[in-house]
Amino acid sequence: MKTFFLGIFLGLCVIPVLVLLYFRLGMVPVATAADPLPFERRLAHMALAAKIAKDAPQQSPIPVNEANFAEGAKAYRTNCAVCHGLIGQPPTAIAKGMFPRPPQLFKGKGVTDDPAGETYWKAAYGIRLTGMPAFMGALTEDQLWQVSLLLANADKLPASVKTSLSQP
Image 1: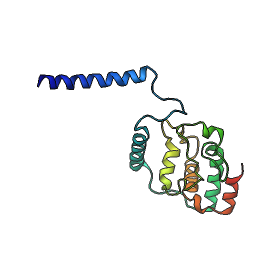
Image 2: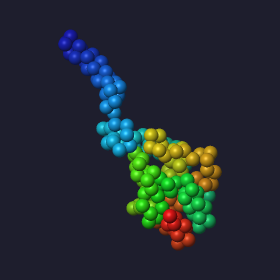
Image 3: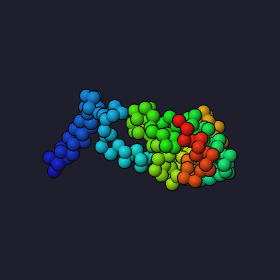
Image 4: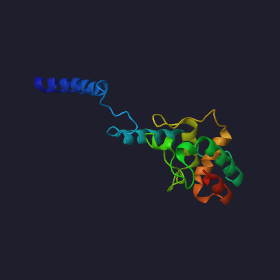
């Protein structure tokens, strides 16, 4: 029994020391081109999903209409496109050099399957350790919602808005 408790004690001491050495000896992949740590994506996505489920607004305070899409497109081009791309345009050098890579929001399904409140939360508060900044204070509340509604409806935008988002 004494050996059992000694084994547990040593295990509890050795593991933290090994983790500390892993970090102190520069073995942690911190470069943007390096592979992620084991479970890094899973843990980050789990934490983000839980926070958004808890705090994201459920309804937009502004209407879904062409005028708000047009204003959202202006704010998106100015603040978001450098990382998240434009319709039919290749990713920028900035986007290619980031880790994790920012999603190209007009390729594939983008975030059209996400509620606008989720996109609003991400744009307003940012996401730690991803390069996604918080735009709360930099953009108005209406601008944040206009961009969020634009992206939530990216698959059904009017032609005029799509045209403004496809210009390099």
